[in-house]
Image (cartoon, rainbow, N blue to C red; front, side, top):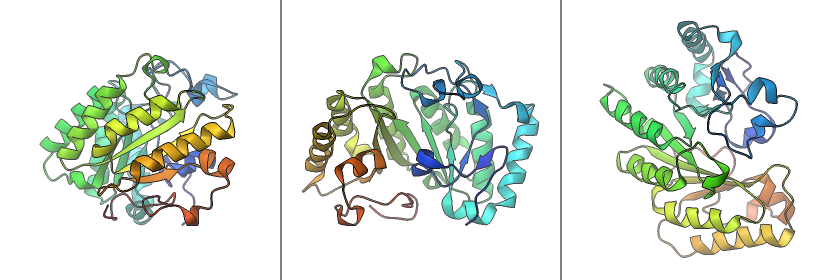
Length: 277
């Protein structure tokens, strides 16, 4: 499949490609204030890392932005029906400022058979989305995956809803028929116990975990091995096993052959919508 390079819809490269083959970004900037956020660092910080979300300048205004999205989706409809669409990499898509356009875009996806994945740290926004989806006539919520970033480190995410609120809303989403996923990334250096704890709490409510380290963080190899071994031990022997995608930041330093991983470990392009647990 060819790469998409639109104003809203595009094919991520590099580390972002481990999350989604195709994604949609309407906004830049985010009010969650996460201290580790990659958007607040490096040369692109002034453009991408603002403390409040703003519509991308090339999209001008809301109606125009949605029209661009519709046209790009229709131009790549067949591919997007296969890969799905991820919201989003450059903001939280369920903040008060961003959720309306996210809901409208998901409505377009529903009409055209494109599955979506939405990642948020806003538990209240996730709850509002569940309410909206269930009130929307004709929506198939089994084609919508709701996800939350779970680090267990509330102090590093000062303006986001607490991790436990996010776990609770994943449980609600699961009960209401949505697919669910959790981004356990980044696991900050020396804080692996927090990540492991929040994984154990969320385990019954999550279909897929994506687990990775903090970009630029310095980790002794023994710490990475402890993360991997402890989580693997928690999975072993359980009748219900959520899938895990181990990001390269963990697999590569340990020299793990992905072909030899346990059966509940999945490749980067594993289809959350068309695979049974």
